[in-house]
Length: 167
Image (cartoon, helix red, strand yellow):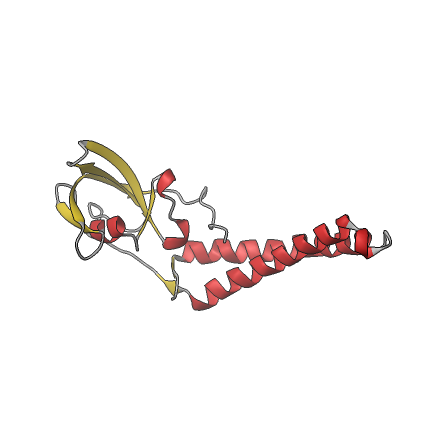
C-alpha cells in the first residue's frame, strides 16, 4: 500500500534523512569504532549498544526513503468552508452529547489522542468535503456506523510542530 503524503510530509522526511545521513551517521560510526577499540567484543556492552543504535539509524533512513519512493502526493484544494486536509473541524456526537475538535491529516500524522484524525480513518473519510451544518454517517464496518454533525470548519493549521510518526 502506498502512503498518501503531502508535499510538506515529503520535505520533512527528506530533511530528517539528510540530518541522519550527514550528522548522525558519522557520529554513530565513530561511536562503534571507539567501542570496538576497547577490547574483547564478547563482553563489550558499549560496542553492542553503539552498533544497535547505528543499525536503528540506518533502518530509519531506509524506511523514510521507501515511504518517499512509494508515496502518493495528496493535494486537497477544497472550498474555505469545506472539511479538507489540515483543517480543524468541530464535530458533535449526538449519541454521547459531546463536541470534539479534530484536525484532518495524512495517515502518518494521525494521532487520535492529540486530535489528529487521518484522512483514511472512518471518521476522516466521512468528514472530508462536507461543510458546517452537515450531518454525516461514519461507517466503521459493514454493520456498524454512527452519525455526527459538523459544527464548524476552521482554517488550515500550521504543521510546523508535527512529527513524522516513528515506526
